[in-house]
Image (cartoon, rainbow, N blue to C red; front, side, top):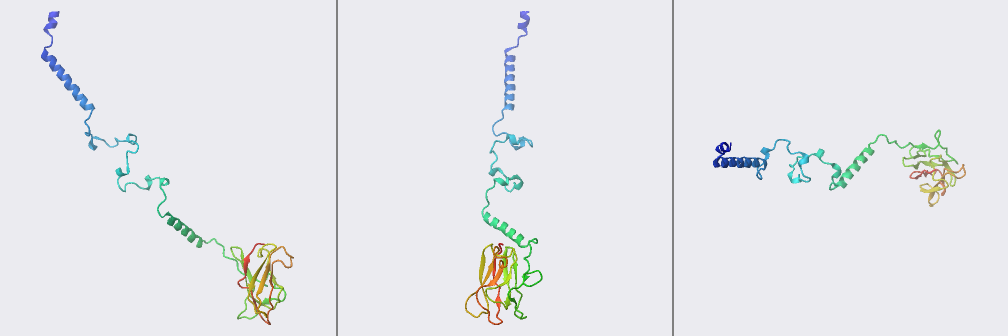
Length: 235
């Protein structure tokens, strides 16, 4: 038996050949697993091979992004700082709002004049009346603008000083317990400044709201002007 085994024992040349084949095969496998540096390029990568998870944080910098390739959809606007000259942009917004307000159709027009002596309006007192001259007379009246300021007008005649001309209704008077004194133009007998006094509410009911010429005496057929007299309505 031993002689038969020895008879078929491989020769030294066969052993060396087998070892050479094993080394050659192991070298080929090693080369297939470990690639040389800089040997893999774009051609070796298939589409979609590099995913988001494979990218390191901060790996893609601004210099790596193609110019004009990003749009507003890719940018989070809340992370952007204030644009230079943003104050001018704010002014533009304000101008737009102002234009819209100026053209608004829901702003009520100011009320018309309430003519003294007309139906449903305050009446003249103490002989006062509108100037009857057609060419230079116009009705005494008042109105309140949108800011709550009352404005008087009119050229009147026939009355005397220190007597009320008419009484303003509630809502068109100065503050409660207070009065307003305003200079007025008149054709008077003296050079003294004529004063128109308007009483607020809270006085004698026969006097509150009264519009009175407190200083001066008209000449015969002289006129008193209420134009230019205004005050804030507070009672």
